[in-house]
Length: 219
Ligand SMILES: C[S@@+](CC[C@H](N)C(=O)[O-])C[C@H]1O[C@@H](n2cnc3c(N)ncnc32)[C@H](O)[C@@H]1O
Image (cartoon, rainbow, N blue to C red; front, side):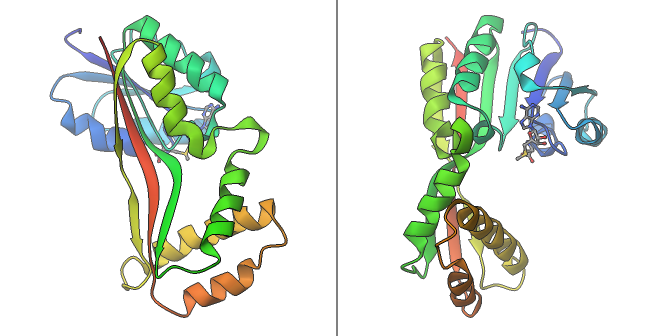
């Protein structure tokens, strides 16, 4: 590894990954924050506490040659299996370590449970897989692709725990719930999502939304 650690954040959004990880890497760093949205890439670069360069474009065109670490968060479900496989191979060819975090796993557990949970979760997952996207298969696809590319792979669950009962996190839990239901309704218009939402909103609830982090270290 060079004196300066070169990191690429793919699908950086507003740069939450860099804000979290950069202070934890105890070394001089140069980040490249990639997004197809130019405004987001610029915002992410400005938000990082280390030197960061925005890169605007499609991830399919990213060349990780010369990169030490390739990171992403909440991205892989938006890629196809082929794109994940290609990314794993390109990262391996570059000799880069990878940390691909917060991929949805499809596991959603409510407390209290409701008979509508399972059919809505199934519709949501089908919506995530539309057009051949990885959706909730992303963690498995990523871990398998990295192993095939020769990485030592470690995966850990990293669930979001949202509590719809406490005043502080209720708005976030409700926002997540409405987004989950909108996608499910789009996928399966026959579902009674309005009835389900009304039941959920009239009582406190907690929900655990499964996410998985995958670490790949070159052997
Ligand atoms: C769900 S957001 C995650 C943002 C950020 N990583 C985070 O965790 O907050 C996904 C981001 O990836 C970007 N993105 C998705 N597919 C992309 C592609 N094929 N090429 C470039 N950027 C892409 C989107 O513009 C968006 O900013």
